[in-house]
Length: 302
Image (cartoon, rainbow, N blue to C red):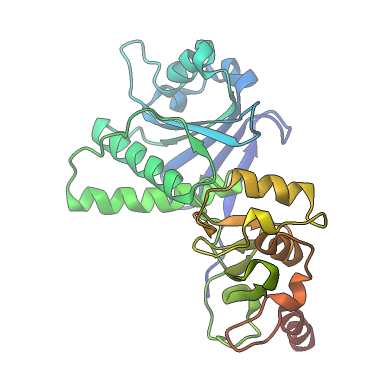
């Protein structure tokens, strides 16, 4: 069973929407969440003049999608490391999309060029794999050359950084289909840990929908590789939101090419069939138990 974690969040301005400093016990790392409008207030923070890795977060005005840029900053001759880099980005008209930054550095200024290059590369690859944010980096950062001992040390730093990033409100490293850790309970009652299936033949199209999904802490995820009804099979009962989602998702030959998150099983069922559908009785385990039955079983056992 996963152990609990004690994370220290310091509201530097006494306001949850202001600057936040984040630390963990027995970890030399330090993280800051800084609104773009508050960058200048950090001029006296000594550790923000050191080397580190930073993230710029924003939302696309055109599509509403989350955007991220990941960069590194080394100590410069003028002593301004991360902070100076953030101020450069703030003045850059090509990076006007970001509204806040998250910074990772150390309490003992132990990061050199090799360490921050490795971390930048690692964070970029993790963000791209999770596919939640549009990563704006133009080039794939070089991981540099490090010893296996140093790699082990930095991987531990990455694990802590992933935990803190989620705590600060950005699930940039979390895959959509991530479920709760598997416990000793591998029966159908552990509904959040199992895969669910949807199969239905649409006679007028001579087409069979074959989709799979998982429940997560965020909602209901239809998985990549699901075979969904063609657009020609949608009717007036499908919501405008799902109609738009079908247009925007990557679908090739009726096969879903990415995981897609929904707020409910019924919305997911509507998406895969192209019409209104009760997902609570349509999504089933491999043993044929409906999601509704799973919920009732969990309620009785709790």
